[in-house]
Image (cartoon, rainbow, N blue to C red):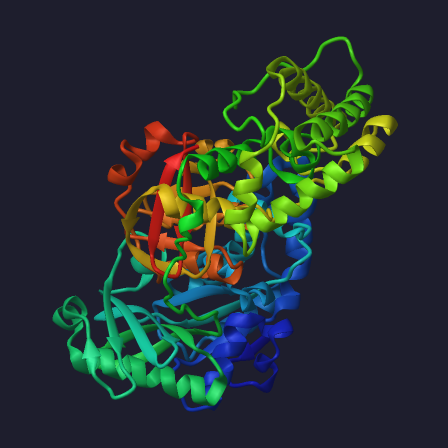
Amino acid sequence: MIFDLDDDRCLDPGRAGAKAAWLARGRRAGLPILPGVVVAADESIPYLQAGADALTRRGSGGARLVIGQALLSETLRGQIERSSAHLAAPMVVRSSSPLEGSGEWSGAFTSYLEVNHAELPKAVTGCWASMFTVATLERFSAAGIEPGSATMAVLIQTALQPDFGGTARIDGEDTTVIGVGGSPVPLVQGWDPGAHGRVTPTGEVLGAEAIALMGEAIIAAVAATLRHARDTTGANACEWAVVKGEVFLLQLLRTAEIRPAEAPVIPELTGALPMQIARLVRRYPGPMGESLILPWAVAAPEMSLEEVEPAAGIYPAEALRIAAEHAAAMTAQVWGLPKAAARARAQDTFRALRGSDPAAALAILQGLHPIDSERSNFMRRLVARVRAGLVATGAVGDLQAAWHVEPQRAADLLRSGKASGDHPRIGFDRWEPFDATVIISNGRSAHGTSAGPGIGAGRMCYITDQASMTAFRPRDVVVAARPLPSLAQLLWDAAAVVTMGGSPAAHLFESARALAIPAVCGIRLDEVLEGTPAALTGQRALAVDGHGGSVYAMMW
């Protein structure tokens, strides 16, 4: 039931969880890691199953209450008492789930600080109960994991009273060290931006703010300890604490590297026409937009982009059939070719526009025949009827998601009248690089700190609290004041994440990097938006250059 951190069984993430397994490996390599004990992951199974059963009847709060109020067996309580007797109080009690071997679960579960021996059983059940917080359940839903199906070990160690704490990571040949005075908790929870230092391969310590806070010797010692950890365990990132000049490693992990790079600016995508087409592909995304709207709408990029009322007096399946016929005829008219040839020509031009020859594609688009506005509006009303029908059948969760259903799949769902049974992630849209390049080439820019590599683009969604998360749409750019862990539930289907405060050390950005979500922090958005994020949410398109730490904005 209980393993010492030096027990060989702790090397198995399935038994001890990923967090404890990394630390066990580090202790065997002689790294400065405190001793501890681990409540085996299998011990959580009956408690998490009880939580899952309560979840269906009493919701998230009821599930947490069932676990939190549960009494551990007398045998397990006795083992915890005996195994932890050699650990000095106060102690820290932390989750160690097998899930935490992957960075997207960083900061997902609860830790308990300042715990005495009598409180250990309650802290253990509290860690298990954190599997059922609202934010964690949202993460499970996004990741397709059934609540209660993942186990959790629990790690118990003596608590430190750090003089300094923070994170460190190896990127390329340099080691980045981010620290704060005292505990690293405010840093990794996204409240404190910390002081950033860097140690070069020659041992030079850079970063005036970090040097002023911690001194060169501490920064260099943390960097040297992490490099030793990399050489002996394979870890390239850590959480650390310093007590009276001595470095301790609190957590080890292997994470994606951040390599700075210049954002692309393609001159061919400056000007009015690329911006108009980018707005079209934002309004009519996914397979349905590209099949039924874009092939003819590119001839009328200045048409109204506002939502229209669904066509009345027609069944959604019939509306889809008529829309497909009209789309083929309108595409033929616009491109001046027979239907099949016109569709193929449109697809070839779109590929060139998204690819290596956008200038040639734009020249072709400028020569298209315009479409009648009345016919255009009728087509959009037909498609609106189709989308509303997909929502009504339960095939998709909302109107925006309906754009991402293949027309043939939509026809099958509408004919059957049955829900699809699942609402999968929408995922990356192939027009996003084009959209990002247009925004970067034409938009206003602001610069902050890189927190996750990659380039993404989407509608800005400013999140202030749990209630405002309902405004989030898949492939939005999440914008917030600070990188709080509660935002992580949105990352599975976000285009990017931007925060005004915090630092790359925050758990949220560890999750973003693991999910390959571009991220930037410490950025002033008011100027680039020409207004406040709260007032302009949903009204701006953002491109996020996570390599260079820049954000670009233009009208949505």
